Every structure is written in structure tokens, then in C-alpha cells.
Length: 221
Image (tube, rainbow, N blue to C red; front, side):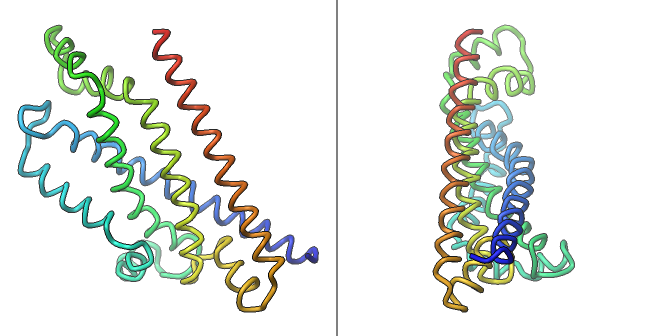
């Protein structure tokens, strides 16, 4: 590849990392409290609100079951409202965040529900408040599973960011389509695939290492 195409590849990689990092952060900030609430608001649980739990569960399931490329198109007015445009890297963060939030919420919910119920009962017996139980028991105990789940989310977002390039979102997907496919430059397409594989493998390994580290720390305590 020419130096110009290498520069484009580097710039597109930066755009992809920007989209994934911001949407993963926003998705976690939104999905974490939602997941905690879903895991603790059932019948007889810490924050019992069965009706709200069911409604939120339906919304989460509906969003998760919508194919991402359809979701991108369906929320274009919402994207324009927040970002001022529906095209570009920053605009792509909106559908990526919308897709990531319910996914992360279910990951958090599942991780918390796997915590031993005996720990919750013991904390209640010692007079801990529901918020204290969440902050000092549920989340710390669920941290290894949460770390693995968030790693899976980030890997999925990399794939989504490539898809959003097909509708003007920028990043590696856009580069692969414009140069690799439309301009018949297989070397560019191959380079894009290689970079995506490297990103996924690197993030997966880092996430697994973090989960092992957190798990060992919990066992030591």
C-alpha cells in the first residue's frame, strides 16, 4: 500500500477506537445501573418493583433483538437530535451506545444473579442496607464475570463499528467498503481485516487477564 493508504488506515483505526471506547463507556454508565436494577427488583428482592422490572425487561429484550443495521436506520432522527447529524464518527456513537446499553445491562444482571444468595442474606442479617449490599457484596463478587462480559461487549462493538461504516459512520468499515470494495483494492480490504483481528485478539486477551486478576484478588480477600 502507498503511504497515503497507510495514513488512511491509521486514521480509520483511530476513528474505530474512538467510536468503540466512547460507546462502551456510555453504554456501561447507562447499562450498569439498569442491570443492577433488573437483577434486584424482582419479587422479594432488594428493590422490589415487579411491574417496572417487567417493562424494562421488555424494552431491553426488544432493543437487543433488533438487528443492528436496522437499529441504526430506525433511530436516525434520535441520532440527529443528539449529534446534529446522522453521518460521521461522532454520530455513529449514538446507535452504538443504544445497542451496547441493553447488552451490558443483561450482562450485569446475569453476573449479579450468579452471586451466592447466602451472601445477601448474611449481609441483611448484619444490618446492611440494600445500597450497601449492592456496592460491597454484589458488584465486587460479580466483578470477574462483569469484566468478561464487558470484554465481549467491546469485541461486539468493534464488529458493529465496522457495520456502521456502511452508512457513513467512518472507521475501518468505511475504509474497507470505499477502497477495498468499491475501488477494487483487495490489499486494503485485507489490511482492514487484519487490523480488526488484531484489535479483537488484543482486547479479548486483555479482558481475560483483567478477569483473572480480579478473581484472584477476590479470593485473596
